[in-house]
Amino acid sequence: MRTRITELLGIEHPILQAAMSWASSNAALPAAVSEAGGLGVIAAGPMRPDDFARALAEIRAATARPFGVNVPLNNPRAPALLDIAYETRVPVMVASQGGPRGHLERFRAIGTKWLHVVASVEHARKAEAAGVDALVVDGAEAGGHPPPSEVTTLVLVRRVVKATRLPVVASGGIADGYGVAAMLALGAEAAQLGTRFIATPEAGVHPAYKQAVLAAEVDGTAFVGRGRHPIRQLRNAFAEKYLAAERAGASDEELAALFDSATLRQAALEGDVAWGKVEAGQSAGLVDEILPAAEVMRRLVAELEDARRRLA
Image 1 (tube, rainbow, N blue to C red):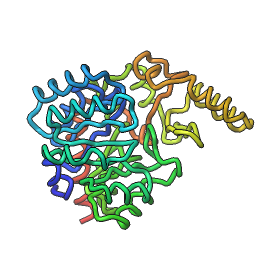
Image 2 (cartoon, rainbow, N blue to C red; image 1 turned 90 degrees about the vertical axis):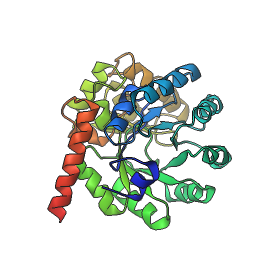
Image 3 (cartoon, rainbow, N blue to C red; image 1 turned 90 degrees about the horizontal axis):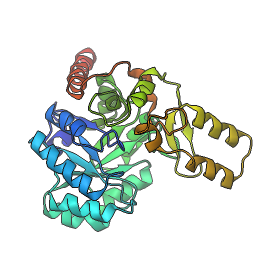
């Protein structure tokens, strides 16, 4: 299936694997997705520069197909990570959490396609004005850092499609090919999946994290940290403690201290799924088995084709 995104990125299927700290901070998962015809994305955010450079060498050895890297532009290591991405001529940049304008010229000069992650119409318009090639639009169902406004993917994607001329990748609440078809029906040119790819052998998170995703229902996530940099994560002891403090009227200082007391690393690397931040989207309730990333891709494509046949 050809769309503006598949043509722009040179990929076979309109499916992107979301950048997920720790889960795709490696070459294995992105390489498997790219080799299967989607776009795999390395999450550079938690990586040291030398580890990032090593992962780039590994993914180039594993696949000749396009891949992407995500660099949060507000990350203190962003300048070093961007330099490495530039020096190694990464095919696709999927940038987030900052303005792209100051970086586009040098990456465009080497042929890199720049996708920018946005969570509002305002930011979508600013990214378009800056000159990015495409947008990734995160809705409230997404794990990690969805829009503070809590506008759903269904509404936000459609609104951004109407507000801009850029090709849009829809993200949030998608775990199968039927969800991909739904996003294409809204006018998106591709869909991005994160949580589904956590439940793969290639994802670089603790087995307990993967099992927590499998055990979750669609109502098993919490939106934690309203008024600061909120995250969507699985409901666990930390999330319940934070939400209880919020309901009880805890001060901003108390909530900030509580929010900072747990980390994603705690859950993803150490396996503390009770008190760590187990970031995952509502689509965890649609995931019920661990499968190799290539098999996930095969099923996504088959389901997308089935959805197209049914709609026809």
